Length: 175
Image (spheres, one colour):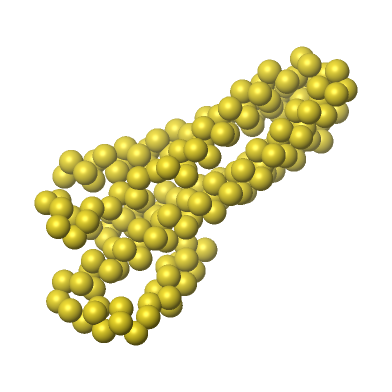
């Protein structure tokens, strides 16, 4: 999937960009720009998928409240908050990219590492969908609380994983 995003962006070059790519030093700069845009596309795709899961989880919460099953709502409410935090972080995350004239240039390998973090988040978002399916299918309050706790743990892990991405950006910026 991540390679597809890069290819789509590269295909979008117009003729002028193809000519300018031949200017010494510009090609590496443009390659980094492509990685930056691919990184942004992946993060926005993950955020959109998580937003859909947030709507599903909210619907489950509304259904439980309507049924009077308030005991299990606490863990789901915490999950909703953690999920919204993750969505917001994905949408506003730094690109991990320095401009053409910055003193410290981000290498393509460093950009690729960030790109891999984002691709892994895409995979983790799919796993999150399965956990929400389990929450939705759980009949009793006790088992619902357990499924909700598993969901909350997964969201904590996703937020921690995304923090490691942010740490990688900070390390890049200090090299």
